[in-house]
Amino acid sequence: MSYWEAMQLCLEAIVANRLRSALTMLGIIFGVGAVIGAVSLTAGAKAATLARFEAMGTNSMRIMPGQRGGPIGGGMGSAQSLTLSDAEAIAGECSDVTAVSPEVSTQAQIKAGSNNTNTSITGTSVNYPEVGKLTLEQGRWFTQDEGERRRKVAVLGPTVVTNLYGKGEQVTGEKIKVAGQTFKIIGVTASKGSTGPQDPDDRIYVPIGTAIHRLIGGTAVTGSKDTVNGITVLAADMAGADRLKNEIRTLLRRRHKLSDADDDDFHIFAASELVQSAEASNQILTLLFTSIAVVSLLVGGIGIMNIMLVSVTERTREIGLRKALGATPRDIMLQFLIESMTLSVAGGTIGVLSGIGTAYAVRLFGLNSAVSMPWVVLSFCFAGAVGVLFGILPARKAAELDPVVALRHE
Image 1 (cartoon, rainbow, N blue to C red):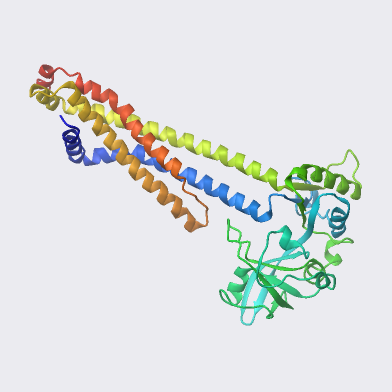
Image 2 (cartoon, one colour; image 1 turned 90 degrees about the vertical axis):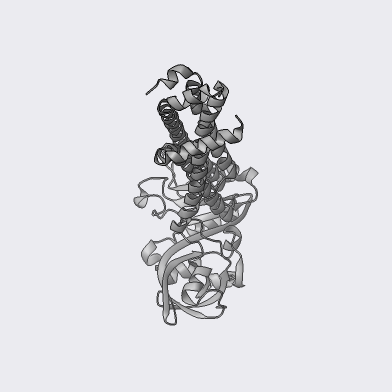
């Protein structure tokens, strides 16, 4: 019997038992779809994380107030342990520092004519474009003089421009109301693109002195010092990042008058460390999801084997008749093996399509996904292998039937 004839018999058997064939394929469909969907989600999360770090700069480090997970001020980031003078000291006393940018942030309502929006406001320094990897699409960044004089000037993110004026509008020189105060738009940043639930383009940048003393409330709110929400430091190169981190830690502990027994009242996040941590987390998630999916595929393979064994029992008389007419054990084995493999490959194909569809569908909900073609091919091949491996036993059982006994079977 030729392979084509075996395929015809296989398709006839599958069509004759459509419901059973569909149920048999479910395990393979879910297994392959789960592998591709899980790997796509973790790959998308990894890509988004790396994109954020790339945008921030892999040779940068972020200094946050408060202990890491500590109780100061209700937790890291809400404590008031970093000041503008700390940033100046880092820039002046630490070696291998390219740029230092202290930052404060707040939320406020922005109005332009009859339109308004609520957005984040970041008060920062003149070198933030270098530190934050920002480029300008319109206008310019504020100057050192504007920062020192606490001028009411603002650089808008493109999302803010779209919300207030419309996409692609030229807004340099226009006036807006920020928390009831009039600011002049001097520039618009180029889009960074959304890499998660937070939109980095939905933001306004103003001089840090302006933010502290005109928007946040200055020393009346923050105490006797000009505290900041964080300080970003750009290292000259990654090779000296660890040394620079230790240097900054020593400097800040001395400035904050901390004894050897005291914990740090700040924490330094190095971008390189975060990248390594994110990659390790994604690898663990990929391994976990893949393990679950492989188990699903094995369960699907067992399902195929069970159904094929039942099929052999139901078609015992047919097998006996074919052997009586001259079919060899090889012909019988080939027929059932092809049937098992066809079910598995069909389930794998549907699983691949459903997994890819899931990967693209989750983007509608703001999640990131990236289809990995090597995993698609691997999952499909594994599904085919499952069909062969779990189809061998039923095929051998059918091939070894005695034709006389098979013909007498009821």
